[in-house]
Length: 208
Ligand code: SF4
Ligand code: SF4
View 1: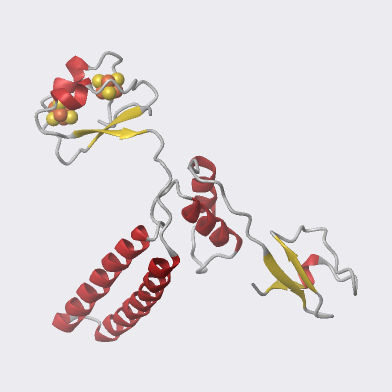
View 2: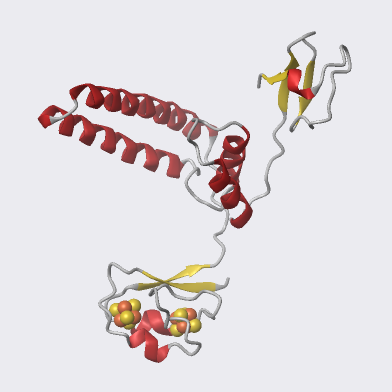
């Protein structure tokens, strides 16, 4: 498995030993970020760094072990509940506007978010190379979860992030809003028309 060097800038004390030992000059960059196009993964910089600021990480992570359904189901329920509670804390903080109550509610909101991030990570949603993450991003590109959702950024991520698991083909159901015909497909092509009433794809709504 190919490894790459990553420097944690917060730990780096700028002793510069890594500059001397790197055989390719990958550590010698203006912005202090190791140049991965030059890194050959020899690990000499990580061994030399007195601050332990450099870690060797795999270029591609192995797929995450699938969680059993009896673990995933309660995790999802808990994550949903935490998300609702986070939303409530946000609303209450908005009402409180300022002062100690506001700060307390903001702290509650933040801590609920952190717990939820852990839950989602455990369920395999926070690993950028997992199929879960790719499927989630693709669904948000198709149906943005909020009006200000950065669709272009999500598209770019999908383009750049390699996926280390086979993506399951997800089938959806689309209903013709005119005659009620239900069509099942991964996605509805723009030139699709209803085989019953001939309405165009724009007359369909996704129901599942
Ligand atoms: S050897 Fe470590 S502390 Fe020194 S510059 Fe390199 S990363 Fe930073
Ligand atoms: S792993 Fe080797 S090639 Fe890569 S940055 Fe460190 S010393 Fe340079």
